[in-house]
Length: 227
Image (tube, rainbow, N blue to C red):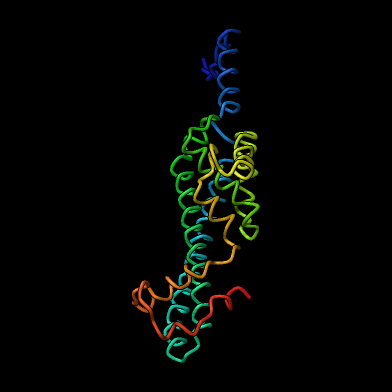
């Protein structure tokens, strides 16, 4: 007699076990167990980090270039040009610090990506990082990745971090989750650099005591810098 193999038919699940299985799958996809845009978020953060790193390197090179020019300007008697270069250095250093702080927020997101993928709640450290990136997006329009992350986190967490960003703007950054230093530096980056700040910068570059009187710097009228 020829024996034929017969595929074993699995037993049907009971209605109760099938219900539990379906509930588990539904919870996995709805409850944050598998955020469908987690990979998109990871790519955007990585690309943003690369952009921030490159921008920081570019600005640091400009600072070095202008630092070298200040001594030559002073030696040539062009003190006004030296102070203009010093003001530019102050602005560049402020921008570099902003880039560093945004990079740090990215690092927090990267370090917590597994948690972000699996959980829909938002602990304070993650809240601060995503709120800071969201706050920076409209203030750094050239960084498209910030806008992408802003939208992704809006989808993931709802409006809370956007509200935090708005509160930072309206309430002077008190009580919000946005990094206060990032907010302050972004809001003040276009303001005129005060004369004392440029003087300190020039003296530091020239290795001079800022409290002493330096004849080579006297001809500069501070009022000229306000033009």
